[in-house]
Image (tube, rainbow, N blue to C red):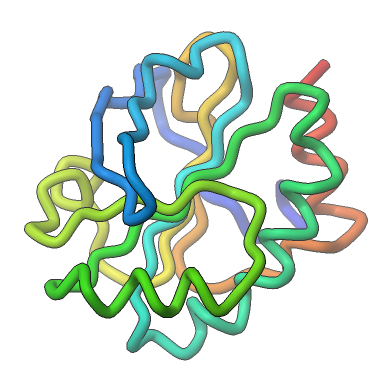
Length: 149
């Protein structure tokens, strides 16, 4: 976690549950993924660093999803119509959710984009990253693999 400059919470805290619509249809509810390691990435289509890290997030997700790793990219775009074509143009394997009113982002204290939160199998927040990271690296894979054990 140190190599990725991840911040550990000062005390153990359950991640706040949320349910958000997805542009394709359906919704993503965090509590439905209890028992899995979940990465929540807050981003926007106008955020260049957010878009730059998407391919690495996708590679991380594709490598670990069969082991119980879930990644949801939560768009905070105020106009959800901008997200659908952007998502459609890419073949991202992970789900994308919409938080146009930033209610979930506010609950999680998001103050910068991208912001990424890691939740363990028991539903506790274990780390967060403010700003972009190189998610398809040895260190990133080691963090996910450690949480999956």
